[in-house]
Image 1 (cartoon, helix red, strand yellow):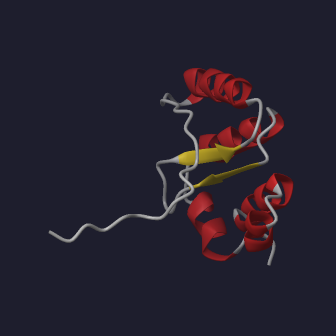
Image 2 (spheres, one colour):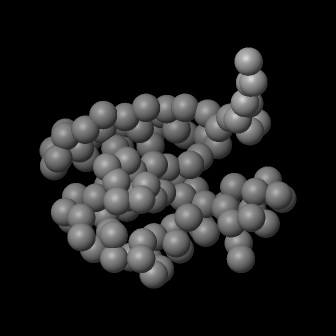
Image 3 (cartoon, one colour):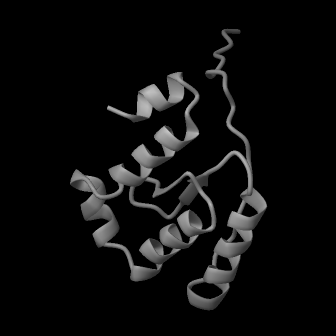
Length: 105
């Protein structure tokens, strides 16, 4: 009830808080519960570093954070955590605000 309004209203805080909330609901809660504790720890670290929202894709292995500013600081916090606890790589990217294009030959 908050994610789509957050997108439509371009309200990153509302969108991010909905991502955070989804992580503790239904099957997503089960999925996270089946992960090693480092996954939840990484989500916390990214939120504390300034991410508007952080979550895990399906059953992983990708965890993600959304932000409009401070992405480099969030990335550095994630890298530091992963270096100490679990390994991994990071990538900063931007949203692609267009749908897929299907070309018919």
